[in-house]
Image 1: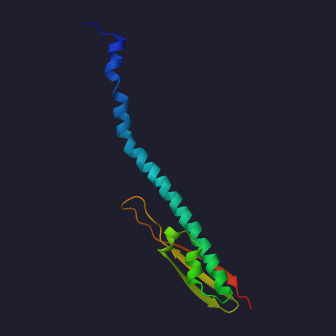
Image 2: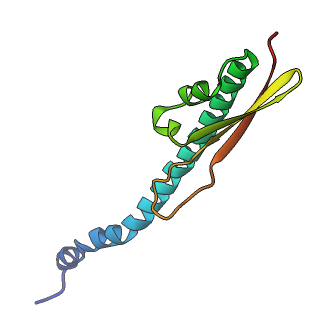
Image 3: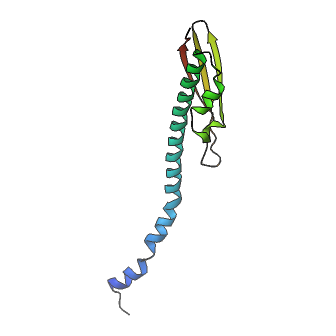
Length: 121
């Protein structure tokens, strides 16, 4: 049987699918890393929001623990803690939020953000 271009195309038909399957794990890791970076940035933004809300509550003489957790997304609130540092005419609150990981084995230190507000007399 003589060699024809059509015969070659039939033989190579599955090659692209196999190459794609070989590259798929790399694409998945890159996509998961991108999502994880976005999650880290979101958690940092939420920690800043929690610190500012808690510092404002503390500057008004209110309890700031509940305000700290209420200011962020519910799914991040469980891993959140706030500590206040009163000092003269102002109060500083530091919010610590755990960064969730979507990739098994990738563990991150928690995000810490501080906010300072003047005391309201």
